[in-house]
Image (cartoon, rainbow, N blue to C red; front, side):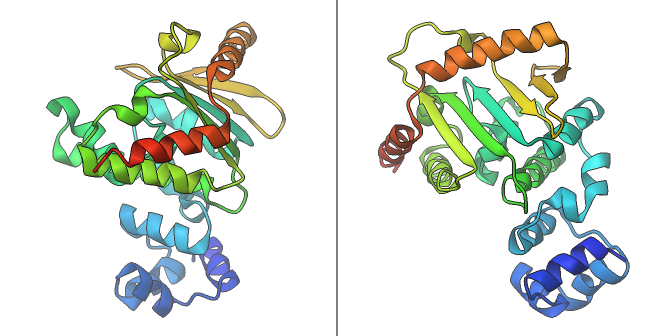
Length: 255
């Protein structure tokens, strides 16, 4: 029996029948999620987690542990536990803020992945995003270059949807967005993206991505360097409210 799922449903007044109706599955399937511990399909897991106000990892922790590249799993564990996450992206919307269409367009770019691989990676990314809307989300601060708002990933319709999603996420008191204007010249962020995480005990970690596999950084000296880079990048970025206004302005150009 999935007791965590059962309790979450009771807390928000959902039954197997009502939940099944909202996500478009047979009530018997929804009942088995609780009574037999059955695991729904990835897209359904995300929908259920959003309805219940929980993270996918809270309701079905085993799904995140066994899925995705092996090298990414250590960071995924830390990401779920973090009390704060600070992300810098130079070329794309941060993964935790991407829409399905935007993420799919990214993974399909260059035709390096099969359709099944693309679908799997998109679903995993969407499942990870549930940590921002769960019961106790981390403080998430995202800094990204203005070019991110203007690069036509997936085309105008995808970009408009993506920017409107950023505006919706920016309404959360736990999400702060900051854009580095493209009038800024050279700055340390141009060397590449990274994420800084703070765990419950105060331990700091970082994650660096590349074309082969990601790297979890724990060495104190390296973390201090990345912290200095973060402070420099953050100092070049617009305040949250000005960023929201810029995103809204650029969203209107994607028609």
